Image 1 (tube, rainbow, N blue to C red):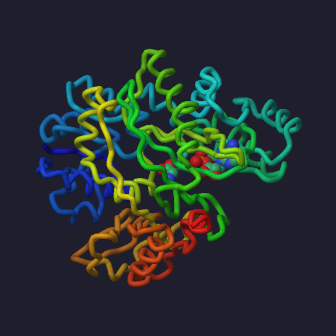
Image 2: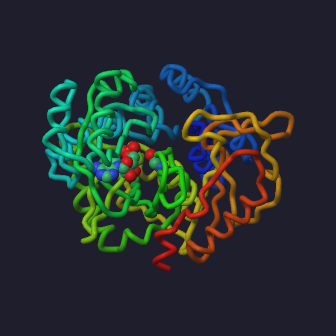
Length: 425
Ligand code: AMP
Ligand code: GLY
């Protein structure tokens, strides 16, 4: 079996690494891939514009038995619809389903219609109306650009001035272009966040192991939001009771609601949830894909074959699937480029990548360029060192030890990933 994976981040490196472990998989093609997927056994990078549906279909028809998609942009643009129309096997949501991530106002209206717990909200495309709403709803309050804004379209405003500035930026000055031509303004939720990711076959659900991401750039959850500075699995805040509540109150009505609308959901479905002091979950956002960096620790704990689970999903038989998870904890720490998440300084040399890692530590690459056997910083999130160990504290220690042997001037990482879980341990 040959598998095509679209994307070029650490998530795609982890998915490719995991798929390549299935003995039936002869080759994993990653488009465009990165320096990590280029070096992974049985993986190969291919040059392909993943935003060109026709090109993806032509390539998949010639070279792949199954296509997986990492990032949201091609999904929102309908790459799965195009592959399916061509009769090709592809696991992911249709464009209609990907609106759960691609349009926050769609997602909020959907949740309201199906009584799925989420923050109260209103949506606006008129600046004066949005500002008038803020007059009646003081900070803290959350402002979100409706469309895809590369993870930057959310402002958690702790003051009224910040809230007004965010609305002015999006609706007045169009800083996110058409993605911010409409905004969702929603109630500020308190609690602890977790990432709840499932596989969905249109009807049945197979939950992946729970995880927790760390969005802020600085230790103690300080500084601006990023794409994610580290993640670990499992997330102890997702107790068995919370897990069941998320399935019953969030995932089941979402899957049923999409099916009832004539657009059954297939693919990975990611609910970012806030869990309050009573253990009640509220949806912060839906994503129509696996998380980055959640994929890295979650794939490290998955003992079942990922391609086998995906085949069951494509056959509509996820009710017969069981995923086996390592009882150990996995934790990934992201090394970020100088300046990230602001303007980047790229091009610095990275040393230490060739060191032996052993079976319980794995460095997944993202924004790395290889040239003549040397590695250089190319993107914001450079790599994610991921480790397995008996508990979260030990996994963090292993990851930190590995990171101490990697050097790249000016790059930075958080030493406190997993702090909430470790406090519980
Ligand atoms: P998102 O880009 O939607 O993942 O949002 C980025 C981050 O903003 C989330 O991970 C939360 O930490 C925070 N956030 C989003 N919506 C809310 C909300 N309604 N209440 C509190 N925090 C939120
Ligand atoms: N780690 C958050 C995301 O993938 O959106």
